[in-house]
Image (cartoon, rainbow, N blue to C red):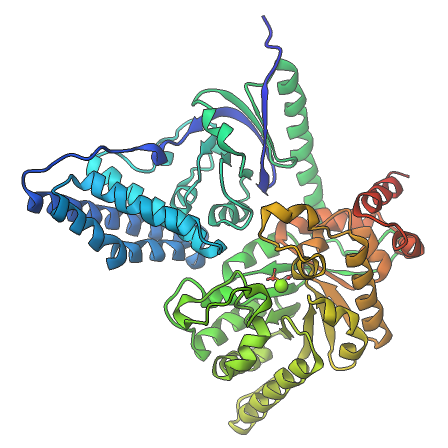
Length: 576
Ligand code: PEP
Ligand code: MG
């Protein structure tokens, strides 16, 4: 008899796509050893040390493989794992536990790792919470060596499946064989977790945060994962299977169609040209930028160059990276943002003061102005690289004109020093700022006089306007790109820039949001910068939207009182 019902779960789309296959459940996380007395603690500690060494060998292999497949930056996470194997804060208490309690290595490891993971997971800080995943990964790997079982069962997968896991560790993600793993679903995790970021680089469909019920999915159960809507259907009915097979075909066909726009210009239906650029965090992201037909880089988040290491990158190292990006982009515009550290992005080795409100604290340009040594090093590296392409320098988190003037003064000083040293610097570097603080948006008319361009950082602008932490799920309902207050601020910024004859872009996630694009086009935004995979869908949308028509709707849009009605308005107009 045909099945009549299925179970549906919803989660967060970490990487889009649709997959239909049998589930493969990863069980690494669930082993709980019992405490056992051991007769000889020295044999037991030796057994533990041996397992650590075997884990090290495995990790070194995975690191090399990841570097080959995904590049050096993505492989850096395994440096952190290897460092954990040498971390006395983790390893010493385990050995002491074995020695003092005469207990088995498995339990000593389980006990100490668990308290570490609990402590890190309860932290208020996203990065420390991600550290918990690293400890889980490393301790799980040592545990498997102790038990003599294979750790990452992902390597054993040899038929098409949708992978289900509590949380997929970065090492699992790096080892996925994409001939077989058609997508993955995790119980926990966020869009910014390491595995989510890797899934986007690999372009494999992924849903994270699908909740505890995902653990009930047994290996072999048929599942549909719709990582466009963020839905998982367990044990689908025949009707659902037929429907989703058709949807998958349509989705894949649409992706193929979009590829035809690769070399096409981004021109609205009525002939108005805008620039579609990409956001990057590392040199490795450039491949996808080029494959997706970006017309430039609208945001290079340089802080990732400073992260996942033990010391600041020096001038030469930075110069090489900036030069490489400029050369690879072949004279297309490249906006490089100076260091935006603080808030959710930390540099443990800088030992910055602990703040109770880091998003409102010593962040981005506030920090670099107070640590001029590191700011000057970055500015010199940028200035030296400027002769290798079309560089634009951007300062993040500007709130007041004085910060902008001070940053420009330091840039000018470094430029003069270089010229004196006989080092060439381009004469046509544009200097701009991010508008991501409501104060800067409201005073954009003053700021516009002193810059070459603005780029609106909506990820922060929304959080500061709505007073809703961008990482906090409890207030995510307030994170509204199309709230009238946000749209009015954006409108003010665009008008202020245009009045001074300056160009204005947007590099927050909103720039790739199809509900927002027609409004932004109508308001006169010049440049849209987004993750590489959003570029072709955005180009397709802009090509069928009339700029003049949407310019005519702006007054009406700005008079609507809530996000839902504004989004409804956009949908309605797009249908007409
Ligand atoms: C933004 O705030 O919109 C932005 C692009 O910067 P980040 O996400 O790096 O804070
Ligand atoms: Mg920002």
